[in-house]
Figure 1 (cartoon, rainbow, N blue to C red):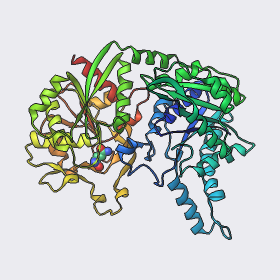
Figure 2 (cartoon, protein in one colour):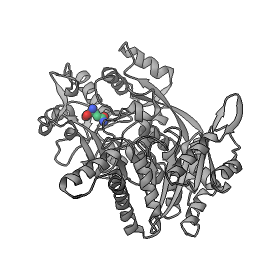
Figure 3 (tube, rainbow, N blue to C red):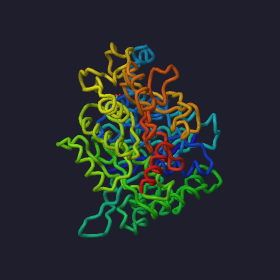
Length: 540
Ligand code: GLN
């Protein structure tokens, strides 16, 4: 099998994920089969309980896995679903080795990091590779991104697994090492020593990188490739420059210009096939030089950290490119605002010339009351808005309180209420293990044929990913849908769970219990986001 292993150094956030996704998209667009795996050193089984402040958003795979945000980059760049088995964590590896030990699989052996833990890592990688190989034969490659940085205390079992993968004569493995070149503000010269040391560290464990990707600020136009080549024993043409860019979607183009993909292909003994990248390049051109600007408000409780709502922001980017415009995301932190007075919202929207609103999902009560006021403002002022997951629940609470006059209506997630319009499903109320109450999967929804959603999807049903616990309470379905403007548009095939709601007399109001942001790709914007931008542009 053919593998590309991507390692990184100095810190996380060196764009290892973007480098892996960019190489993947170049190879996929040249006609090869590609899978991307991420090995994460943490002890958790998945990213379920990770803090968004530390790790950014939790991405949800089609099969309900809660994974690192890099999976979002893989899917958006490759325009293909990446499944949960592609996420390998130290926790999963130890759990299954210990499970096997209890089953008696290692009788009379001492269970150790080498061979047992390392073998388990390799086994999981080979399972993904096998699927791809069965499907694409030898015209396929598995890219493996190793989380963390070279030399981390929780890193060696993954490094050793990569070394052993390379020792197997049936494999061709190329190693790509991503590292920043450091520069001082008082001296524009970039320094290569730290990078050299990281390569020495890799060599200590028996890995010799075939390529080095040098990350620099955008102003650095010259990189000392010859010097790095000489000091690290990597051919000059394999020293790839990857400067910061206005858009991450420029990275595959930068790589192609340096023939990175060509060298990778030839190393695998493939005859070079140039990637079909014309549409991609045109879209990047639009991103760099947009014709119009449009302000969209992103209202939520983690707004100060960009990565917390990464997929929502990226889905907006995909949609705006489609309309040759640039969307300025204006963040409204609903947890920070102290005085909950409605006029503030009107002022905020006016001051920032906001034409549309998107509200991402989250857990917990912080910021919700303020959000309900945003919902009221957008409903009454006919501002286009897209509400996701908790967003839908907030929109229902707002409607129940302010249109149906159900005083104190709320979600039971936030305490007791006389009108629990949002509640846990009955079947989940007695479940004690918190994780089992999560609704994590892609679920089908039957769409109301006269709904806007069904027109947008061009279908009678749709399938989207879910990550939540609470639902619109079925006891209130009739009241919500029969006494006014709100349309449930619709739900699970048994009609118990609401998937979408919309207002009939509103230019664009759609709320969904699902997470459509995880379905958007650079070349294929998600329809709900696309239409939000379209409706917002019409407000100009
Ligand atoms: N907290 C809500 C629930 O559990 C919404 C979750 C979300 O927005 N992802 O249902």
